[in-house]
Amino acid sequence: MDHTYRQFAKKGDQRYSKQPDSVFIFPGHNRVRAWMVVSDPNIVRSRIFWNNGSDSIEVPVDMTSKESDTVSAIIDSLDEGTYTFLFYTYDKGGNVSIEVQAIGQVYGDTYIGSLSNRLIKNASLINEKGKVLWLAESDSHALGSEIKYQDQQGNTNNIWVSLNDLETIIDEHPKGDTIQYRTLFLPDSLSIDTFYTDYQTVVLGPAVPMELDKSKFSELRLPTDAPIDKSSGPMTNLWDNILDGKSWYRTKNGTGSPHWYTIDLGVTAQLSKYTVWQRGTVSEHNLLYTNADPRVWEVWGSNDPDPDGGWNNWVKLADCESVKPSGLPLGQTSDEDIAQAQKGETFTFPENSPPVRYIRLKILETWDPKNSDHSFFSELTFYGISE
Image 1 (cartoon, rainbow, N blue to C red):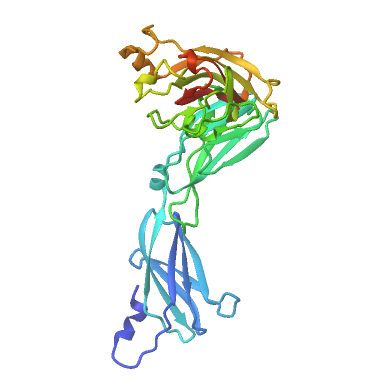
Image 2: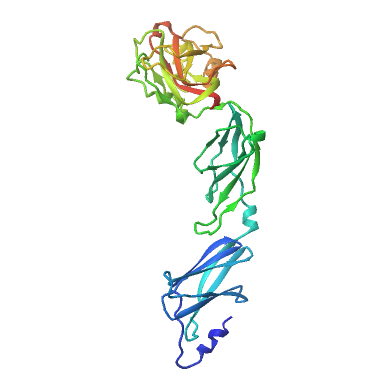
């Protein structure tokens, strides 16, 4: 491959074509794009060698074009692997330049075989719509995913799923209750090709109740809601997944009995169950099953709460009563009592409960009747099928 310039190694005055100002190899799928910048107007062609000089291509150089300083060419039909490419230029006098090297990567079947589709947490049909819940994408080279499905008329539709999407809603009933999806990858930010996994078929099954995403919860303060006590943390303490003695929510003394407050779940969901933890679960065990921990309360739901704080548009979802396993008198607890409090008390909703977005907890009695004019909880977790 060096026969073209070997003669210039002899003694004497020799002329060389100007080397490329810069060279680069852009990786691809069994191919690369070779790129270089030349500035000498006398250069008329270039040649690129690889495989130790056994293969090469010639690339014309037109220095009269608008982008005359940039030359590129696709080199295809390459096996997967790492290559060293040697660039030469030739001027009008037939002189050749000294080589300039660039190393490039070629991707192929081995790389494609290493790719994995993004994982799906759950895929279901809810109210004639498809819903896909995704696990976080762990591959840093992934670009996103594509969903492909047919509607009831047989038309093919596509949905792009970005890396940050954890939920995808298909606003119709896919034909055959199935979808297909694949994940796209870019092994290098400068790759000229995008790589894909094979399409994977997923059957949309019946919806399964799951824990609602607490990051979507927020307080909805209505005019008749119980005011917060100054010693309490914010209502967000009710869904911060912290059960120590420093995280709880307390309504103000003298609020009255019954009293209530409202939570926006952030999604409309048919609730299946929920779990509550009393204040004193981890520390302050002296507060368990006593003081202002609720003993009897109701759970109400709505999709359109009255802005004046009234009870129109609310439906009762559940009657709840906390039970102390030991049955010991007020102020006394057993190890079993403490164990149950730490596990949390779970209450179920009727199967025919309507989907709701807003929850109102109406506290009727606390464990110590003298403290029923206020109340506190440590944590709440809701489960259901969200739309």
